Image (cartoon, rainbow, N blue to C red; front, side, top):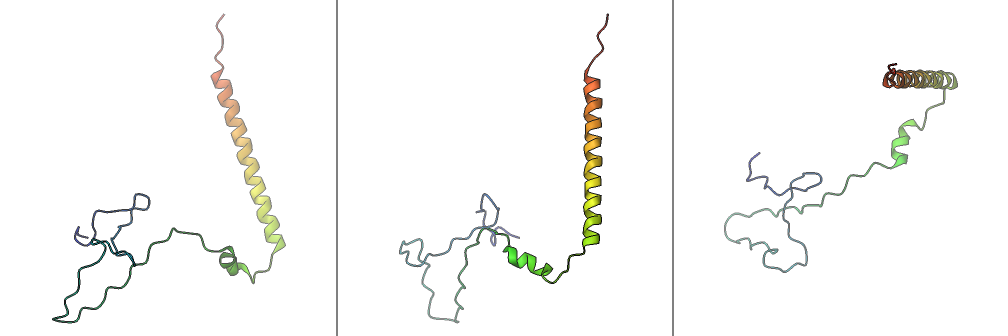
Length: 112
């Protein structure tokens, strides 16, 4: 990419390149583009630039539409829930052990 095609003006948030476009109804001299000469080859009009909208997540209905025809399998769901509970309990016990070891390591024995 060259600096000619991408000027140095960027959005401070998303870092997308910004372009200056004329606003309809604005009659300021800098906002009105120079007149296109009528002599010579025909120049196609420049398509309007649409403003970039902030990104929004898709609607919930659209996301959940992929799961609309599914049937709930209770045995698989119960097995998955049991595995998740077991994993959480193991993590909780490991964290408690780690805290206990750290607590005892911080207590320095007092010399007599």
